[in-house]
Image (cartoon, rainbow, N blue to C red; front, side, top):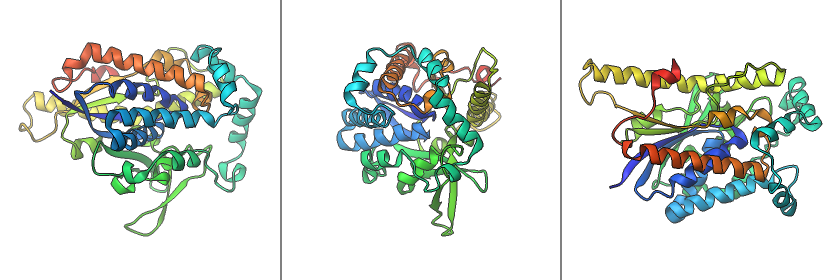
Amino acid sequence: MTTRINLALQGGGAHGAFTWGVLDRLLEEPDIEIEGITATSAGAMNAAALKYGWMIDGRDGARAKLDAFWEEISAHTVLPNDMVQTWLTGFMPAPGRFSSLLENSAGYLAVDMATRLFSPYEINPLGIHPLRAVVEKMLDFDKVCALGGPKLFVSATNVRTGKIKIFAGDEIGVDSLLASACLPTLYQAVEIEDPATGRLEAYWDGGYTGNPALFPLFYQTESRDILIVHINPTHREQVPRSAMQIMNRINEISFNSSLLRELRAIDFVRRLIEDGAVQPGTMKDVLIHSIMDDELMASLGVATKLTPNRGFLLSLKQAGRDRMAAFLEAHRDDLGQRGTVDLRAMFG
């Protein structure tokens, strides 16, 4: 029997390789069908690569395109030579140690200081986005926007209004994906014409208003199950003390806040349904599931989000595969039947 589920994929730069691993393992399950995917930033890149490959060759095509996309990402590093990257992969330290070494390197500290003193309009007046070439090369949007396969919903933040923008269907393209991943300290806002007004609207990273937004799945899919893949740790035991650690934790909290608000609303609706306060079928009874590795993600920092080293990406991919495998072993039979997340503990 086939079980249909929806996916909600958080953003987090290179840490999105964890989601790559989760998807890679999930796509090995022939009796689990993905109906819809709502995603932000790196999550949106993963979703687009999956959809593109799915339209070519189903599950195998999706896995192949995800592999190819992240392989291309890994080529855009300070050490692009394939032989050097392959050699270094064998000596890759644990992700947490790699993050610590990177954050204390002179090169990263210089870049971090520059982004605090100058805006991307000053540092990068031509508005060159390093991911544009990757997205244009690796994704065919005729297939990404095709009617078949999973429905895609990509979140971005409207700079002028501060409201969330959901790109779906033919609206999804190179610019909308880059808008969803546009960190305002690093990149100029991505401008996209609003077809309703003809006005150019400016967009920043979708994580500020929806990381990712769950509500499109309530209205445009039939499946009750939503599997959230978390990239930003919800809990950090150690109180941040350095300026870099403080800024990183501020970003994690802000990027999780919109998701936690939606989860609180879902829990409220579930209580209304359970108490008989609303008529059956009036509101969708959503079942929430979660894939996360807060211990791993808490060992990482902002520097590794910007460093697509192949060995590091592969270690995150394996961690994602392991977490997905553990979820399936524990909760495969819960899909379609019950949620597996204590929502009140998560947002309380």
